[in-house]
Image (cartoon, rainbow, N blue to C red; front, side, top):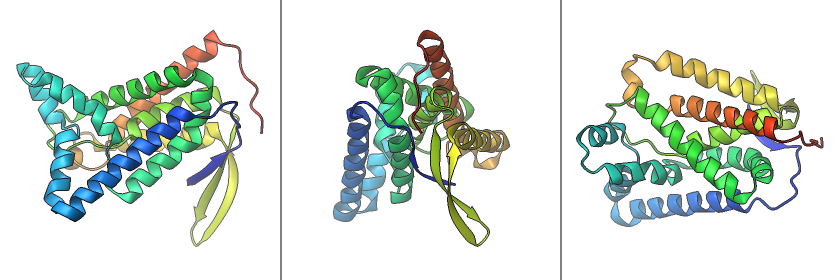
Length: 234
């Protein structure tokens, strides 16, 4: 399933969401520029330096040496992406679900929530793959937090989705609670299946997705209790 848009208008321009997307695109373009001008070694070095390497962070925590530098990579890794498909998918999900969460929290509150969700999600993946030497990159942990909050705050909003059925393709509107619920269950099963697997040191950081979504959903529940429900226009 590929989401195209949601039927949930906002009251104000999502400037933080737009700024995050712009920053990710600029960083991705810069990394591509390094590859084209200086060779793939420079691009890989850029990822190695600013990506989050669980093994390095774990070692820094245990020794106390270089801890500040490794903690900083939790932030910088959120703006790195490895391919056009990687950044395209992440930014699509952020654009669809981020604007409404930003509208609900306000610009500053949303920025704090986004970064905190991404950091918590990254640490969740580090806890599972503490010895990995593969850099973790991408905004998907933070975006999973946004999706978790949307899941709780706007469960009845409808998401226009491309659905593939064997050789056929169709576009249908799916309630957000089903679209995001299916996404979370799929990621949870993938995460459970990866436990103890040989591929734990590489591939998709599914536990970052699971933890990020759970954190976002818990925050969404807190906001729903504190604030009266808002009308969702469909």
